[in-house]
Image (cartoon, rainbow, N blue to C red; front, side, top):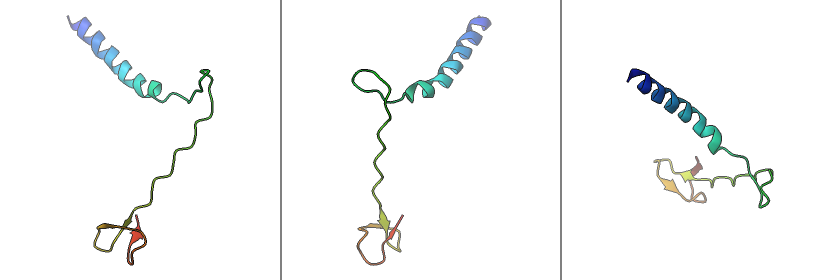
Length: 65
């Protein structure tokens, strides 16, 4: 019984370690060939006022975060 539990724990450990590596697959085109991945779009700039509240970036006193 201990051997089975030890074997299950070891296989779960190896499966958890291999998970992120398989999830980060490179980009492929329609013919299943490897291609360069397109760049990720830049995150929009958000601005905060001096009090810490979010505001439009054009308002006076708002600074980008």
